[in-house]
Length: 466
Image 1 (cartoon, rainbow, N blue to C red):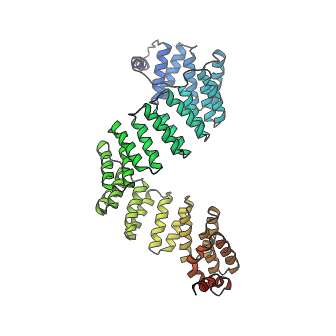
Image 2 (image 1 turned 30 degrees about the vertical axis):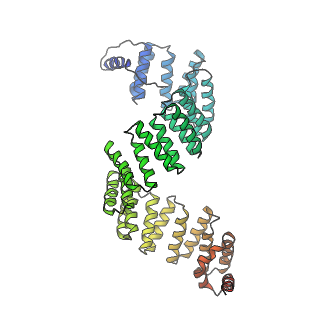
Image 3 (image 1 turned 180 degrees about the vertical axis):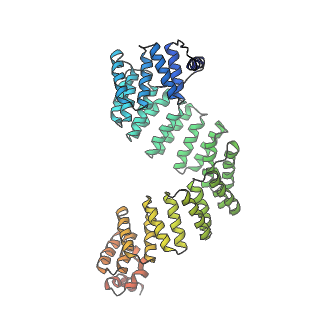
């Protein structure tokens, strides 16, 4: 595994690069070659790393460490068979070298055989006291296997080895978060902060966990401590702004977002949040200004285009809303959120044919939300395309088999299609799921009062009111 280069290797690297520019061949210790190779691999200069390995093995053909670095490059390049042969040779020489098992594990991991990779890494653990990196690799393998509990424990071991291993700390919190164990994450981070009270990363993560539990005052305090620990920590200011928004303190939230812009280059996310705050404060001109800055800063940020579109949509300026959602679709025509909003705008403009097309695009792109299906059917009913409405509802019911409203809608579609037998069966299913909802469809159902089984449903209501 490649290690960080150090200052002592600079001279060797300079000497090696001088050698490459001339026909001279310089001699290096095996350890010097290791430093040179680590430097190039860590900096993504694989071709130079390979040259250093080649020269290194010529000068030190029996160096196990150089051979292992050669194997690492072979694995990186997916040359597993050749790497395996080298590892077999190395294992005959030094069967107790944990790095041999680590590289075998890397091969199995790249072949998606994560269970075998875990077994090999556990064998490596038995051979070394310096197990920090191996626990980190184990954690990643468990993540690949979706075993978040074991992954969490592996990354916890890494943090035990090194309190400053923030990558592992983030991974621990990620595992807690994925398992929705926010209380566990809060306990873990508080314990960590007992030992490291000025760790801005831990305070930041603690604030996010409190935010997830809607414990906004506690989140606010955590982000404040993160800022006290590092007053240039952008993430803490940004997250604090989100908490203040939740508390309705929009002016204070704006201050936080503006601080992030003062500390570093402006970001589209900061502009968007400032715009949202101004919108809440009724500062429409400022809201528009920041929304436009959002998409100027990042034209691919869907939330920016949607914010502008929603701004005009709420003001019932549907043509302007349509203009901006179409600009967004021209940039990213595969974005289901854009098409859904486009469909809503066309519906508001009573352009139902275009709304139908937009809803179809929405579903084709993977948006299967309940209101998407419901609103699409409403549009199809407006165009009297009852055959398509029936197919859409049958598909929706596959996703939401317990949603009574879909059965009621299908009942009306069958009635409009002159299929009273199917309509009666679906109405029965609707009422079995939610009998009270029938009152919401009374007006539409009573248009078909020629059917006694419909009038009978509301006859009881008349008697009760009498």
